[in-house]
Length: 208
Image 1 (cartoon, helix red, strand yellow):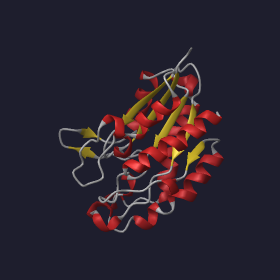
Image 2 (cartoon, one colour):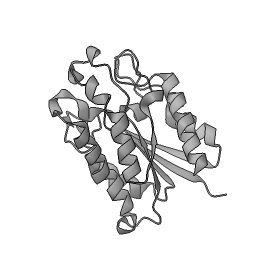
Image 3 (cartoon, helix red, strand yellow):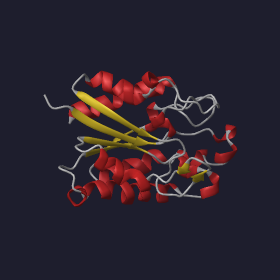
Image 4 (tube, helix red, strand yellow):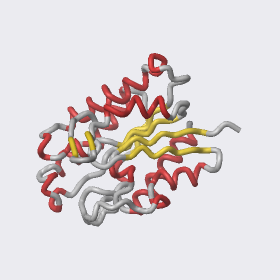
């Protein structure tokens, strides 16, 4: 039986950063990608392409760690992991950093242009088929515990409606951030949220 192949492309909340302020990686079996693969069964492969600090399309260089601009690597990821049945996109949180001064409208446009539109040109990339797209709405952050995100909670509250519109206009599925909670660092998902996210993704995928 052919395996269902799912690419999860995201930032530290896909990579699995522990929400305690240490910025350490949680155990591999504590990420939503692991839970999702277990729920969907042995004929499913969930590929985790999470990277801490990844933005939608903004250059952000980390010394010795390279550029965190997610658009630079996305096509490579699509081609590397071909064939794909689903692509899950979980980006937007890092674009909220105060230094970028970016609006939610600019963030959602970046996702459309650099991810959704790219996938829809699958044949030009040499992909065998067009994978279905699932957007995950970034969580509401707590800017009171992070200088990098000072004053940005109000923007993260706007993600829910903006991502619903983005998904509707581009024929994508979307996961609401109402099921997501961040830990004490104000940015990264709790383990309970990883589990709830996997459950929500499972429902969408089983629905087809």
